[in-house]
Length: 145
Image (cartoon, rainbow, N blue to C red; front, side, top):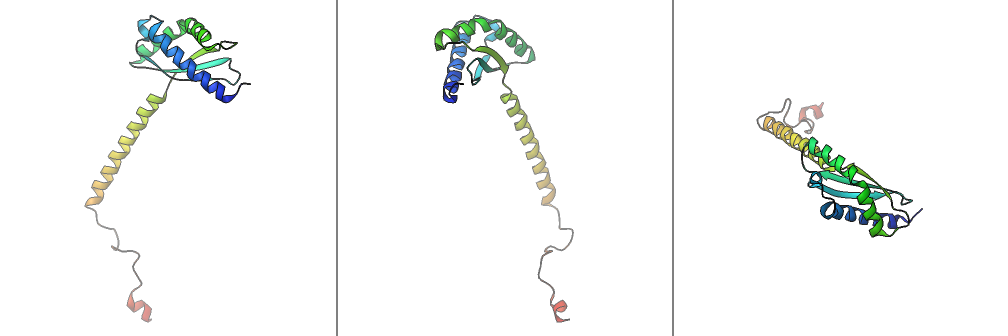
């Protein structure tokens, strides 16, 4: 097992190499809108998972996924040449779901804000159902008995 700090450094370096390779070396127009967001390497440094996002619709994502799979060998060769590790890790590309999750959370927060505004609007003209102060002190005449 490798040192966890070494695995993090290697993962960061792999992300840089893959991003640079996609930008400068791989000449596939389907990869024009791909952004490498993160990389993770297993503890034994044998497998690397590269996370990416694609700007576009589902068809663009599918095309980019296919282009990344076809460029996997070239990118792995670049990683092997530029890292100098004994065993070049295999590359697996995974679509990053963080932007979609963030968009979904933003939509949920907007709905919650709208619901809060509606409750505040309804409460503005409302009157209490019972006494205005249900926690007031006991009445004077009840104490006298």
